[in-house]
Length: 105
Image (cartoon, rainbow, N blue to C red; front, side, top):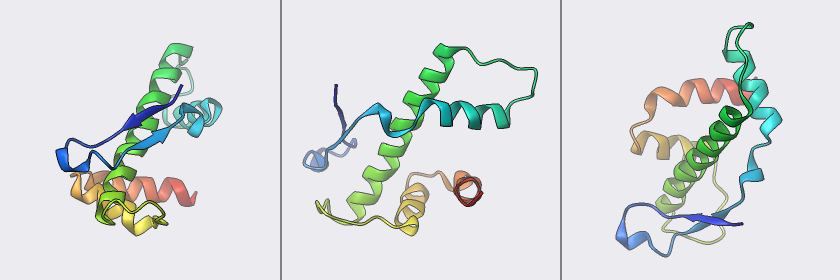
């Protein structure tokens, strides 16, 4: 099943991104969660799945904002700077550095 995301801006109704939840493999997300949490903490399968849903929505939310910067153009190559700018616009400045470190690691 495909879902779509469009921002809260009514003029952005043409900017709709279709996505599939397979974008982030559950095993990858679980590995990241295990790195962050103490060793003695177990993560329930439902929690992993809910975390995956949140991560996918977050990625599309930030990506949608970056696409808006380009006027909703259909074929745009988004750069790291585009996503960083979008996150700043969304007020997520505190997450830019940790995300960048995580991507490089």
